Length: 461
Image 1 (cartoon, rainbow, N blue to C red):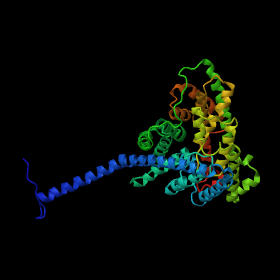
Image 2 (image 1 turned 180 degrees about the vertical axis):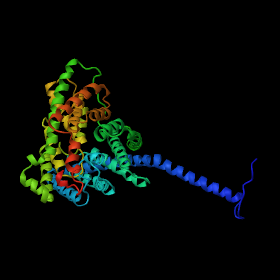
Image 3 (image 1 turned 90 degrees about the vertical axis):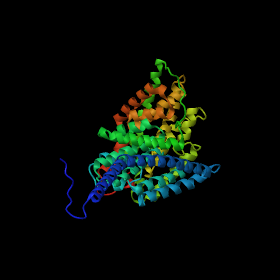
């Protein structure tokens, strides 16, 4: 037999009991809401923000480069004033206020994911200061006509934005930080190229390596939401346009594949050597300026980039996106020496130690190499050779063949080239690895893995 509840004081009664239950339900609802916010709302919101910033950054980068071209139109000599001036300013800002934002940004993400534990690493390589520096200083690089890309910086920015959301979690851990970094990096690449599959492959192959697969849910979610933001703001587009190639290839097409892989593998290994072994080829006086007179060193870098740009009729300015797209569309051929002059401009620009990426310039160099392969195999379709060389060169530099071929396939809608591009990427990556290690991983080890007590100097980049 049920008994009525007993209240011991006059203040207790049915009304007090109901109020207590109401407070309990309110607390439970708040806990559920907070859990849902941390589990879904926060990562989704961070991914949307990554997509928004990626689209805006792309527009600002294009506007800055177009402004530079407008300044020097009909007055190429102005490049000898503009390029060194902005290079000096960019180097000064990077060293003075934005240490950690230098270079492509992908080595910083790799260091945060795989370097030994370091309490200062996140604050040195990520955060609002680094995000601001990455955007501001790289835009100065585009204003100066430097041979840099925006895709690597977008990866760094995406990782930094997602990493900032860790501050809202009540229980932070190294695993949570790594999970957010990986998701933000994948979302950044996806939004930069409008290639969601490549973003996922890139995070797994290039960044995660042996990282636990449990992070893939957050990563895929971030890629989806950043991609939706990019799609809503920039539309559904192909980065380099439609790739018109035959659906069936003659068995003899294996010959251009092999030659492409060898050429791209060797030149990609040479590029990695130039960036990782600059102490060998750089003149001693310039090395001394790099270490102790950075602004004088930046002036020399700016003058060298300007000289290359003017002497090539402007072909080495910027990321190389326009040149590669025009060649792919058959609108404008490039000079036979374009691949090598762009290669040199890319090495010199990266030596400045300012924020700037390697993806777009690498794809442009690959497009230039296609003209060499076409000279040997005139019967092969030029668009097909461009796709092969872009894939091969990017794979040789990064030594991430899956990422390389998926990026080019998604950017050009080159599904008919899947097997030749896969073969080229694998061969070129293997050939490059014989001579040099993967670039991003080597840069991370050289610049960040063994510098836990003091901030990394841009002079080491």
